[in-house]
Image (cartoon, rainbow, N blue to C red):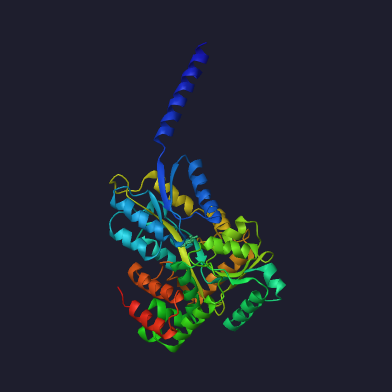
Length: 415
Ligand code: BGC
């Protein structure tokens, strides 16, 4: 009797403790733009991991590839005093938010990160020597995705030069396939333009887009870039305006579109549709860019909660989880990226990811590893925005290439 009373009391005590823990469970609000099939699967890995650790999740997913709409929503939330616990941010924007004094440092979770991260990314996620962001993965931008059945049908091979590319595009057109699946949104236009800039060589990309060197920006080679972009445009279908990137990828998945220029989150869509690299689709560095690598590295920053200067337990746990080797592997397998952590084995990854890792390492050594301008990794939002306007206007008008170059040079001066 005594014994059963004691165990009943213990059970009640346990129940109370359990309820208290549950009611005290920290809710983490998360703002991000991962809403396509592959993207949602990838972010679900994090949500599940956090839930296993007892944390709640308030999802603020803001649709819109490349996060333009998400960044506007974030500003509104912060200004109105409702900053999320975590938000997807990258590149120079991380510093901008840190400078506003609204972020917490996650140093306690980042004890050994430096030795596991590519140096340029390690410095991107720090401010004043403290970690203020946690990186997820590395996405390579300069990829061309090709439907394998279409490629075989026209007897083609992945193009290594622009001449080969246009020859293949002609074959696709002759076979009734839309040669280039594209979504006419500014950031997707920029993806193509930036990739063509990269195809002029690592030095050219550095001078033009890193240094914003006026001589390079106004060179005959830059006129050629605009002319190439103009020619690529003639291979889009009629309904490309405003199309979301994942719908363009869906065209390549189904074979109605032959090729797409896109970062490797496109591979997340192929994977989500059970399509396999080298069987259903081919990945190839965009023409002329096999020795170079443009990247974007997604990261989360953590905002001060309730005016407190330190990170909450949930924020620290999330930062630690994101950089854990298991999460890094699972996330990238779904997302199409490669783990940002260099010590994660690539055994479970497909040939495209393995190539991405090898090229990442090779280009870091050769000096051909560049932050992407199109994805907010390189210049201030103001300068990048001015260049994006020029590129997108050019791609949606019949402007002369020389006029495009003239406007580009002016936009590069906008600070
Ligand atoms: C992000 C990717 C995302 C893509 C499309 C990019 O800015 O880095 O993670 O999949 O936008 O939404």
